[in-house]
Image 1: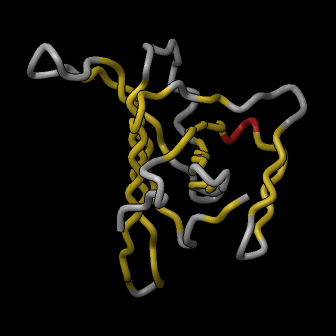
Image 2: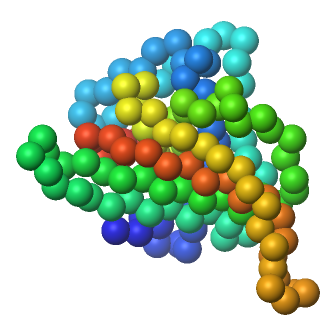
Length: 142
């Protein structure tokens, strides 16, 4: 299942390291996410239509698991060290202003950064951030 909004993409993507989360509460429909007071959300400057989210379901004996794969093509190279960010939660916002939380403190996501080179001169060359993980509940809105 490829998740996008009806207007053709996501407006923003952000990463929050688990160490920066004060509290995470879910009622099964929405998430209340509170950050520690001195922390800001790390917004990622992405290319136009550079956010791709794929959520697939896997059924096993323990129930449904949602596999999350979020790719963000960055507009500019970003100086981020992902070693401390390996345990994170991601946020994506669609064109209607709905913000979806990907990952939970118990089922966190992992972020990696790599260079992407275009095969032709007119193609995209830059950094791509990939955020992957699994969680037992469908991603919820804030």
